[in-house]
Image (tube, rainbow, N blue to C red; front, top):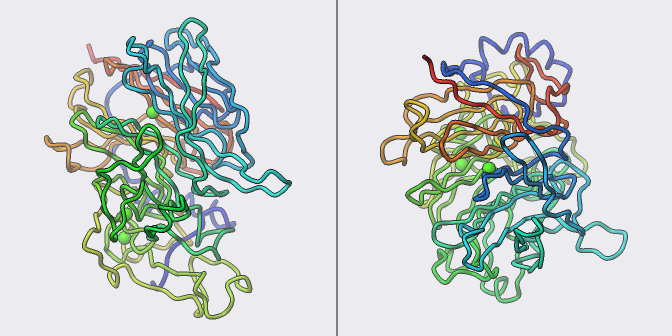
Length: 464
Ligand SMILES: [Ca+2]
Ligand SMILES: [Ca+2]
Ligand SMILES: [Ca+2]
C-alpha cells in the first residue's frame, strides 16, 4: 500500500472495524498477565491527574492538569491535601494546563532543598490573543503547612501549542532536570500545514538570543537554574538544552537505578515507541516511526505541498500528489536510534481503514525494579490511554534491551495517564483522565470511562 497512516477518529467505519480488529490488529493479539491483583479506587473526580509519583513522605504526589493543583494523596485511605493551586496556567484543550512534576531527590531530607519542579502551559500574550508557552518553575515544600511556596522560575518561553505537548519532567541522577517536548502536532490533523520541527536544531545565535523555538519534538536537559549544562551534547555544532531530538509526543520519561533513561512517545497510527535515551541521539521522527522498516508509515510533508497546503483537505491514507512523500528507508542519519519496543508495528499490508490505529497512546512510564512480583525485576511499565491497559516490557539483565513481547495488565475502560509504584513494589497506582476515548473490555472504542479522574490502586496478591 502506498500510504497507510490513519486518523482513527474520522470515520464511521470504526464500529465495524472494531469487530474485525480482534483477529488482525497487533494491539489485540497481546499476552495477558497471569498475576493476581486487587483493584481499589483510591481517589476519583480529580481534574485529569497527569503525573503521579510516590513521595518521600509516603504520599502520592499528583498534578491535576485541568484543576491546576498539586495534590498529595494518602495511599492508605485516599485522603487529599492540596499543596498548591497554581495561578497563571493556561488550559483549553487536552494537551495543555499543568503537566509534569519532578521531586528533588533530597525533598524532606533536611538538606535545604525541599524543591518541587512543575511544567505548565501559560499564555505569553497579555492581550486577547493566546500564545501558548511552557514554563518550568520551582516551588519549596513547607512541611509544617503542607504547602508549596516561594516559586522561582527555572526556564520559560518554551514553545507550546494545542496538540502533542509532551511535558514530562524527570530529575536525573546527575542532578539535572529532563523535560520532554512534543512536536506540537505539526503535520497532523488541524495542524497539518505546520512544518514538523522535530529534526530542527538551534543555531549559536538562537541560543545566544534565547530563541527556543526549535525545542519541539525534543528531550531537554537543564541545570536546576534553567541554564544549559556545560556537558550537554554538541549537536550540529551547537550546545543547547537539547539532549535528544526526533521525537513525536513523548509523555513518559523515567530513570532506572543505574541511570539509564527510558522514554515513551506516541506514534502516528502505529508504532508508539519505548526508547532508551542517549545524549545527542536522533530518534527519527518524522522520517521514521518505530523501526526503519517501511511498514505502515510514510513521511508526507504537507507543509511542502506544491499546491498550497491550506487548499488541501487532510487525509492520512491518501495524501494528494502535491504532498511530497518519503519512505522511511530513504532517510538515514548516523545518530539514529531505533526503539526498544513498539506498540505496535503492523504487517506491511495492514489496512488502517479497516482495522484502525494500532497504537495504545502511551502516557507515563515507570521502571519496576522491586523483588515483590516474581520475574518483574526489571520491567518497563507503560500506561496505555487508548487501550485502557498497562503493558509490561521485561528488560534484559543490563536493562538495555527488551526481551519478549509486552504483557498486558489492569484492563479497564479508562485512559491511563501515568504510573506510580510503592517502594516495596507491591502496589501500582494509575492516574486516569476524566474524559476522552479508550477501549472497553470488548475492544470497542468507548468514551464512557469507568473511573473518571481517578487514582486506581492495584495490589499484588501472591498465590498461596
Ligand atoms: Ca509517575
Ligand atoms: Ca523513533
Ligand atoms: Ca517504521
